[in-house]
Image (cartoon, rainbow, N blue to C red):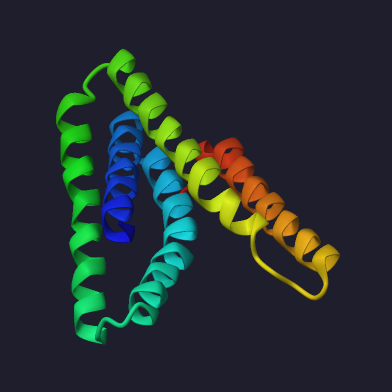
Length: 149
């Protein structure tokens, strides 16, 4: 289940990156950085869960890599069909909906059910992490036109 869910999530990541790159390279770069920031801990967590469930390191890596390939499928589909603004907006809306679904239906209940001896500290750390993520995404969206190399 974790590999299938991760594959769908990575497909949505690819859709979002492809739609962003079809708008401009700056939007694509900002979206890629945002996806990298949330995918790195997500993939490490999936890898740890696969190892904890009894899989060998090689099988866990293979399953993680298999689910990661779906992001390229989403990227290529998005780049091939996102030729006009309306299509880019539809792809962005679908990707945003998938991100919200994963966050609200999968990750949020997991955060609530984590046991702790200090529930207020857990609450503050979780909300600080969410707030920092929102701030990073806000800064990326506000200043994406000023990115230059």
